[in-house]
Image 1 (spheres, rainbow, N blue to C red):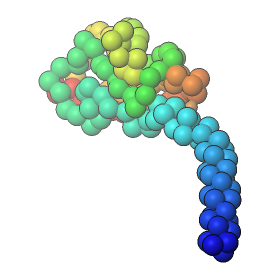
Image 2 (cartoon, rainbow, N blue to C red):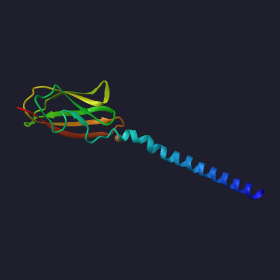
Image 3 (spheres, rainbow, N blue to C red):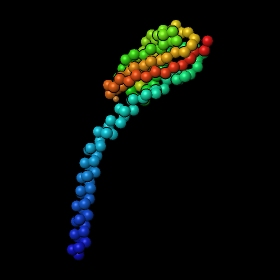
Image 4 (cartoon, rainbow, N blue to C red):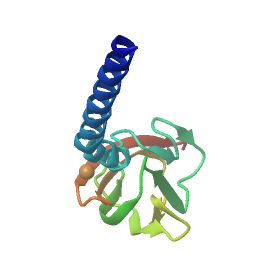
Length: 137
Ligand SMILES: [Cu+2]
């Protein structure tokens, strides 16, 4: 009768220790898991319209860039033609989607455009990048 009791006691002590270790690990790992969603805001290759390397019939009045996470603000966006002329006249966060930047353009010409963006992610990190598309003559 006494050996099984001892072994039961031993198991329960081991279980408690294991539980304490698991709780300790959870406390240590929690900040890592909390930081993961912020990391997804860092998208080095965001989706855009026009898409990177697209060939379109005309320069859209609005170029949009969609990131992997919410942004705090737009720092700057340029839509530059081959001659170095900037065709962006405005750049703002989409009021319906804080992960999207809407860029207003004017004076369209045919040719290659470079979109150079600089944004601040929700966690305060500034990111830059660029992509290009072409407008058919
Ligand atoms: Cu960040």
